[in-house]
Amino acid sequence: MFQNELITSIYRKLRDEAIPLSFDRSIYFINFTHYDKQSPTYVNIIRDPIEKLSSRTYFGKESELLKCIQMRTKCSIGDEIYDFNIPYFCGQHPKCRIGNSGWALEMAKKNVEKFYPVVGILEDLNSTLIALEEHVPYFFKGVRQLYEKKLSVGIPRINLQMDFSTQNILKRILKTEYEFYEWIKARLKRQTQYAGNLY
Image 1 (cartoon, rainbow, N blue to C red):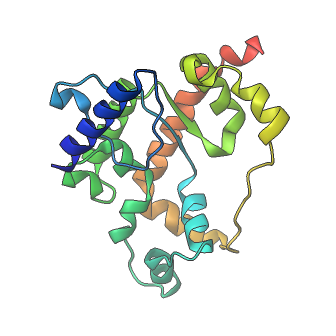
Image 2: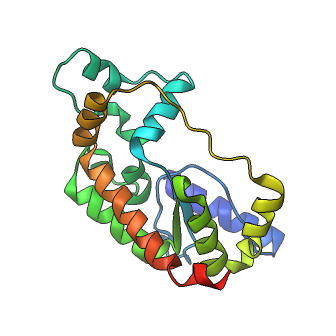
Image 3: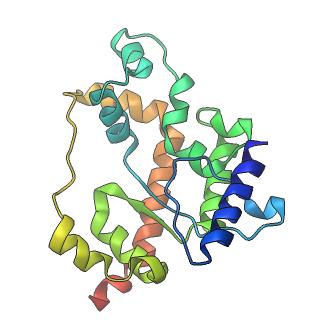
């Protein structure tokens, strides 16, 4: 029901404004074509899963996963799956929120290939901006120059003093998240390897 209401709301806004619009909202992927509607142009920017976890923890969201690792017990993604990347690209199906699910990983990749002209990487903002400008020029033409002149402040890195052993444990627990992250990085590299030479 939520999906249908959201799609109706978006289409009402598009009709009322009668101009191309962009919407900024954190939501699990919705396949508009299942509702006989034209799909929007999806874009997204993701970040390294451990960096994302560190950032959320730094800003006050307690991580059960990190607590579990510190207690040296057997750990899994658990409820924190909602904070990671795969569910957002996989979609609304409950199976999308099962940690380390091969099915969810493959569905996320399929959706990216079909519906997302660009998925950027926060740690490689330069390539991300090149890809956005190249593949979604209506909204992003000139974005690199704008960023360089007016917005460039660097990407803050959150350091939780995580030791090498904890990072390795997390990478094992988050194995499909890292597989997806590396796949997105490779895709972004392919998208920008020639475009970047034009600037």
